[in-house]
Image: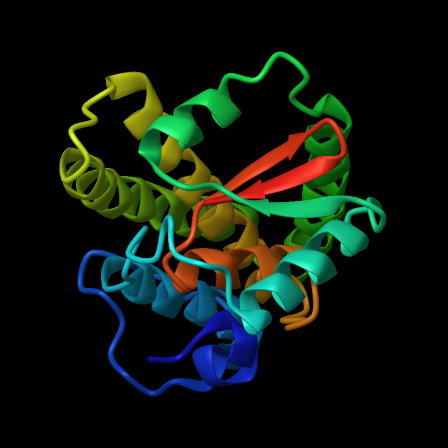
Length: 212
């Protein structure tokens, strides 16, 4: 399966696009490469193994992606902690010292990418494409989170929505990378790779980046 690790592969994949996604036909073909890549990402998120690796020991590759991500958004000195199970994930998500600076750093980066993507793609088509990706990711991730948490006797609706929302946000951010410059080393690309690996990044609490 193509990963955002190899953004060029996603962008150049020749598979047919989803029937329910229409790129539009008014622009030159070469101007639509970013939108095509986003549409293919929408296909990708439908088959991802969302949350399939949560609770397992972190691999070297996952640690490297996590380190690259937190350094890229401006927090290179944070520690990385693996979260054991869905109950621990719930506690981490509700921690009182959850890092607002982390959210602000992501939001600033998102706005910068969106500005860049809007210079390269028709605004209406781009917004429809981004919405399609995030909605599909949310739906698929919610189902997978529900099934994964149920195996541990957890059925907290708020926690499941947090997981689905995080997946939708990561897919949206990855789509922005594709619509902008396709940089496979972008922090949002690294973050999405963690989701591709079946993980759930839970954000920064204190001096720690929690990764489930």
